[in-house]
Image 1 (tube, one colour):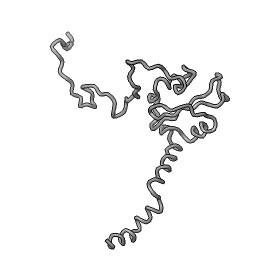
Image 2 (cartoon, one colour):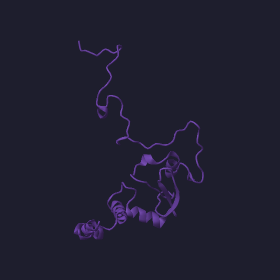
Image 3 (cartoon, one colour):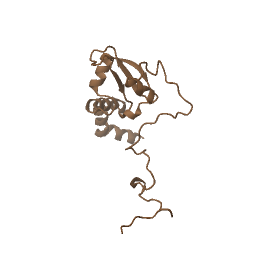
Image 4 (cartoon, one colour):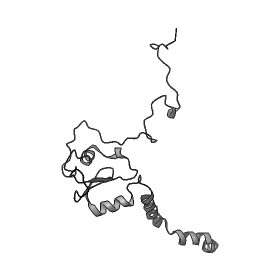
Length: 163
């Protein structure tokens, strides 16, 4: 085994990689910071996070991990209402907001679901985000994404022919 440790110690590539880039745990925050600086679709930008930290109050979190905030005052409001924000967990997709939080975000309900939750009916299903445009979207039989093969027409169908 002495030969293997000597090879690893003498390899300049291993030494440079470890010292220049650091451990993988140090790389993750750098990537997250760069994503927040240069993209709005990965949660929120640095400017939004700064504004929320300075002017917002944490209200609650939904089952998807989205976090909701409300302004401390209505300083920038043109209609007298406090501003409300959501910071999405992962990709910023508005259909990921459940109906109770959607109502609070659009001022349908004054109190957030953490204080006054909506009564849930026995027939209601759990909220699902809109999956259109993703790999998990529903694709009916005959769609190009499923091979484009349709079942043949039944006997009650007659094709139109011009006379």
